[in-house]
Structure formats: C-alpha cells, structure tokens
Length: 420
Image (cartoon, rainbow, N blue to C red):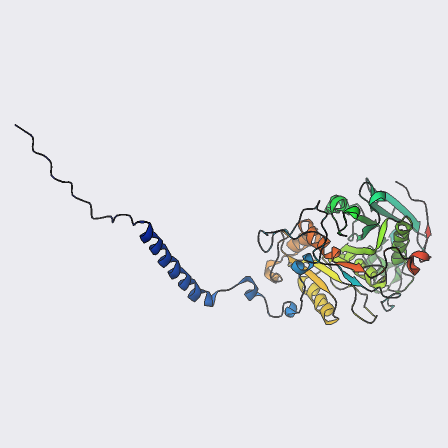
C-alpha cells in the first residue's frame, strides 16, 4: 500500500523572520534616536568630576594648569591620554621643536627678596663628600668655613651638545644629592629630553648641591635655653639676606659650569622637594636674574617674599591631595597668593598613584601614615609635565652676549678643584 505523502510543514509563528537590510537599518536608527533623547534628558542632572569640587578649592583663579603648561613646548603633546590622571609623557627621545615659542621673562636686577631672619649657623655636624656615582663632584668652601659639595649629572658628550639647560635640584630634608638617582628619573631623561627645541642641544644638566645638617629646634633650645626657631631644612631658607651661604654656595657651583660654557644661561631652572622646594623658590626669587622658572613637589609657600616690581618667576607646584607634611590646603593658599601677584603658576594635584585629583583629600581620608608616605614619594610618573613646563620658559637675555653675571661672578666663596 502506498504511504501517504506528508502535508506541508507548518511555519513557526513564535519567532518573527529576521528583518531585511533596509528594515534593520531603520530599526537601528530608531533605537539610536531614542537612546540619544534619553541621554539628553538624563544628563540634565549629570555630575562631572569638576562639579564635585569645593567652591573654595583654588577659587577658580588659575588659568594655567598642567595641560596648559604641557602646551608651552619641549616635547610634542601625546595624541591621546589614558584618563584624567594618566601619565602625560611624550617620547623622551624626541628632539622636535616646541609647539609654541617659550615665554621669555626679562631678568630682574639684584635680589628681589626683602631681607629677613638670621643666618642659620647652628650645625649638628659637617657633611662630607656625597657618594654620587657616575657624576662629577664639585667642591667649594662657604663663608662659614664649611666644605660644600654638589653632584653634576650630565649626558654623555656634553661638550658637543653644550650649552645645555641646567636644573638645580635641591634635595629634601634627611636626604642628600644621591636622591636624584634614588627617587627621580632625571638622569635618564637628561640624556634624551629636549628642552630647547634644537636637536643640536638635546639633553640637560642636573646640579644637585648638598645641604647642611642643622640642629633640630629641641637641640638648639636646650643648649641656648631659649625657644627661638632653628630651621630643620637642609638649606637656610629662613634667612634671606645677600650673605645667605647656601645661596652663595649654589652661585659658586653654577658659576663653575658657566665658566666651562656648558650651561645655556637663558635656561637655568630650580627644582626641589619638601623643604628643598622652599629653597628652590627662595633661590629663584633671590636670583631672578639667572633662574628662568622653578618647580616644587610637596612644598608650600617659602618664608621669602617677593619685593620687586612685577610678578615673581613662573612656578609649577606638584603636590598630593593627602600630605601630612605640607597639607594640600596650605599649598593652595600659596597658589592663590601667587595668583593675586599675577605670577604664572602651573599645578598638579595628585592622588597616591600620581593621577590627577579633583580636590584636596578629606581629613578623615588622609591618615598621618598615608600622608607621610605620599609626601616622601617623588612623582616620577609626572616628570614629563615638569619638563614641558620648564621648556616653556626662558630668560630674555642674549645667548652669546656676556652679561654682568657671567663677566663678574658673585665672589661669595672660594672654589676648590673639581673631582670625580
């Protein structure tokens, strides 16, 4: 018997047939239009990171931040950044010209700081020669009779690249010039980074003077029976007279490099950490005729006060939102004061990982331990921002024309022979 033929298969109706190309495009367009309308309505109540910033935080007074500083020159801007706190590091080996001509500041005549305080002469001990490996050690004797040293870190073939920019690095309290290698990446960057925009002058020199070991306030008070203040910083920043032996000592070391024609006199910068930042600011103001700009990490306002017409030298302040030594609020009071004086100021407020932080840390989120660790941690990941800031500033003096400062160096100390 023949088997019956099966009837036509029934079409499933539970799942619709996939749309064709035209229908699919129409569906997607409608969905995207709906999503855009929903986002537009929802974002009327959106909150950006900057909207949570305290209204009193920096008071919105700064026109220049790290991003603006980076655009000044030195290295090309990276095409993309990871996020607001990502490291803004261009290629360190690049020798491209700056994007913009650096800002040229006329040098100020003489010291621009009113004299105050008394010289710091109470030393706990005399410091010996620092163990700076792979660096030239300069030696002199200050007006107090103490031997003084500085480490000079220069790129290979410095004579053929000269004149080069000079960064005078003031170490933190409890440290010495070897912190340039222990904490920072300046040695490596100094071999390849171009602060001038001229491929023939790629690299920079680091001069790291050694501070002094002052007695702590308690030691001095016990010996004198008084409660007068004795600085614990490695450099004397309380005394701002012309015979400040630390300022004169740095002058002597800089003069040695100038006499060797290694340094571009238009591009001398001061940099310091913690109390060394106070010295960087003090030296820049007392020697505004030779320092183009300065930068600090973990430092607030130095005791020195600007006393010349016009604004003080440009500065960049890098600081942590949580810092147990110099609080975020204290640093920003200094920044507001600089803004009131029309001083060019770039700043980076960082978290513990070196990322940008929108506001100072709340007290209950900044323990003493965390603040101490943050203060001691040099922001190595943000050195690119720092160097771009320096590249954007020069002194408005001739490159080859002798000036009073090079023709007649300040006779502050007796210089000894340099050694290795």
